[in-house]
Image 1 (cartoon, helix red, strand yellow):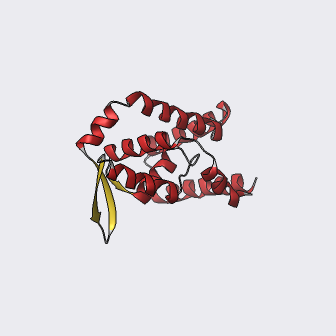
Image 2 (image 1 turned 90 degrees about the vertical axis):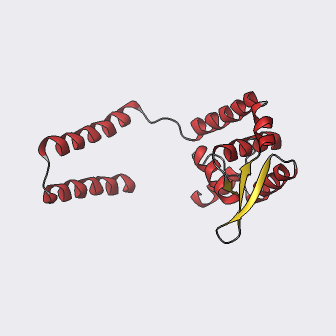
Length: 163
């Protein structure tokens, strides 16, 4: 079932085309990027809850270039990097509220797909981090002791993965 999960996520419709266009423009304004980077940024921003397909992103990129909201330049062996134009900045500035709605949709989807862990799990993780920091700063452990600590953490990780 895990292998079909990304495809199911990709097909679920989170945005209208207009909302996704605004969000792509917003991302380009923050950081000029090529199409694949935009797809990966949206995937990362949504913590994997939404992965737009190239068949959705590339037509949007073509449209925003045609509309004059973005410019395109070839970089790194023919990749097309998209950058915001002044017209695109003006267009986005007039639609800040709409972008916030898109961000809220993503946040809602992230929370639905990735609910926060139980408080006792958070406590156990934080307790481990505090213990490691205390050991490091108060004891300045030797390389041998650090290797043992790393081994213990890796063993615990293996046990958790096997549950």
